[in-house]
Image (cartoon, rainbow, N blue to C red; front, top):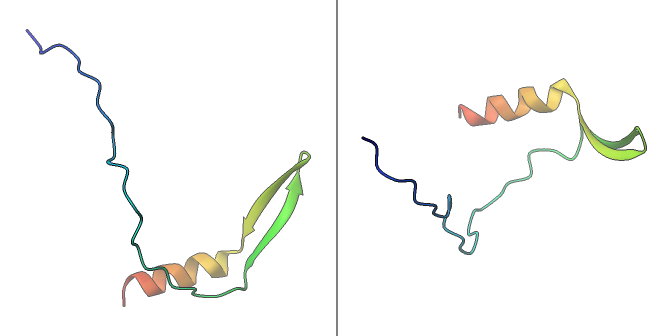
Length: 55
């Protein structure tokens, strides 16, 4: 028989001390789709991100 379900927080909420690095301010734009603003990311941005991930 399985143990009874006990709910708990998925992630501990604490101050975010992550250091972020701006790779580029190009290849990302804000556009409108069905009346909502959305972020449009060009394939070049994903390529740049993947390249940086393996350095």
